[in-house]
Image (cartoon, rainbow, N blue to C red; front, side):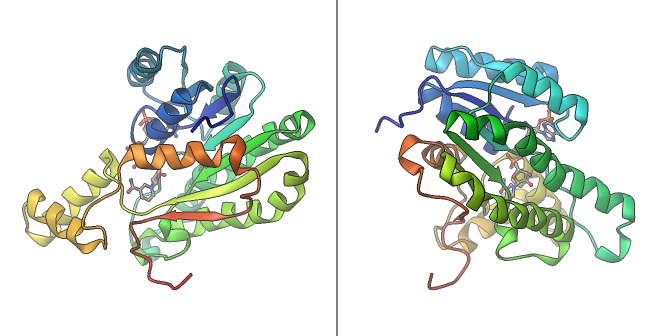
Length: 259
Ligand code: NAP
């Protein structure tokens, strides 16, 4: 399917690997001019080169911390007029809420709520003026189905979700949609790190923990970054202009509800 977005400009945040990388790949494949960012210079440059080669295009890269003002400015300056914004950043650590200080909360809110809001603020009026825009926030299945030890993530990401639910109804008339894409368990370095920690505390091997966690999902496996990226690209496509203010859960059906 032609996604109808060739030639648009996209900024995909936190995209040297994992879910952000999957989105950058799929948008580049659709002919979008993609700019990607993450903190580690060698990694983000290598990823841009790999995607450029794979799809015979030029992917721009910025080494920056997207949770800072300077990082956001660098990423936005490199992209130019942003038509497609994929908000993403590292997730806060798990823990016990009794141990979290105000600073821990501010850091989580900065990364997973205010960074997305600042980037929307910087780009949405231009999108509305040009009568086309797509904003996809990578949040988490925990927004719908919270997990206690991920309280920092639950809180901050739900804040972003609530904010976007309000403004999405004002932007869509000008052709700008805002949606959340909610990952359940996807096989990325982050998930592998979590499984290693869980295996250690349960006294299991990594392989045994991997098998058990995958089997626990109705699909009997984890999701892939490719599946995630292609779903993101569809939400960013010309065909998805009537999908707005939604939170699309990708979890293999782990969240049990009838609708
Ligand atoms: P990942 O494989 O660890 O990749 C994270 C990417 O983000 C890397 O490119 C990393 O590069 C970059 N990054 C991290 N912090 C950044 C910052 N402050 N500024 C710019 N780039 C930054 O993680 P992932 O699994 O793709 O997860 C992406 C997001 O989805 C996270 O918020 C995660 O919590 C959430 N999520 C993931 C899953 C899952 O199963 N994978 C499930 C639910 C939610 P650098 O370190 O070089 O900056």
